Amino acid sequence: MRKVMEERRKSPVKKGDFMEQVIKDMGVEPLYLTEDQVIYFTAGVWVATFVTNSIILSLIFKFLSDHPSVLEELRVEHEDILKSRDGSGSNLTWDEYRSSMKLTNYVINEALRFSALFPGLLRKALSDIPVNGYTIPAGCCMLIVTPVLHMNPEIYKDPFTFNPWRWKELDALTVSKYFKPFGGGARQCPGADISRAFLAVFIHVLVTKFRWTKVKGGTLVRNPLLGFRDGVHVKIWEKPQTNKTN
Ligand code: HEM
Image (cartoon, rainbow, N blue to C red; front, side, top):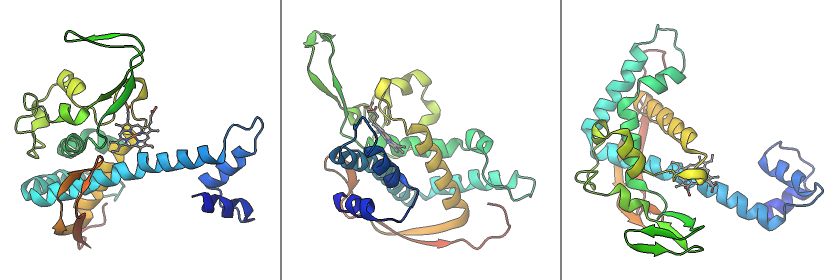
């Protein structure tokens, strides 16, 4: 990235992109952005945005390949969205996303529950915190291990089973306490809503326009981020379209 920055600083070509803006901001008085900060920040944003969604998508591919009955129901949900249109061939709408994707949201929740991408959430105790007879002293760093919450068998029966329908039974209070894929409080992930929308749109396009089959892979590992030992290899092809809607 340092090399890319150097090249971009020397280059007269204008691209109007993020890097160009950052390089411009680095020269603004008072100087507050150093080259190191820009590099760390850019790498951080790359992890926060790209790595997260691509792992969740790989999980969704894996789970749907392993559970053809869920995939079939998902197809019905999305074909129903296409059928309910007036034939004008419009694109996916906000209303459709908000009101016609129940199973899609369950599938996304279940993938997020499994993923708990990060090993946990980091927090610092600002004052002494009493917990079950113990005290976490002020100033201590804490790792709140969200994967443990997501695999609590008292909340999620057979927690290691992919079961999107479990979300039908879970009430809002339980979900708020035991489901933290995007963290919580003031530092909650600012990309939560856009990620959910992105995943739903991806699933819509995937199941209405494409077909795929898993070729190999899908073994989950945590090291410490969740990932796949051998990737998830799929063969994907476009479905012959019977009408013009999308
Ligand atoms: C499925 C996708 C994603 C997941 C599961 C995810 C998860 C998380 C988690 C668990 C945190 C820590 C929150 C906390 O400490 O309470 C976080 C922070 C953050 N995420 Fe995401 N994220 C996702 C996508 C995104 C996207 C798309 C963006 C940007 C558009 C983004 C930007 C950030 C940023 C900037 C932070 C740091 C927030 C802060 O410390 O104030 N994330 N994310």
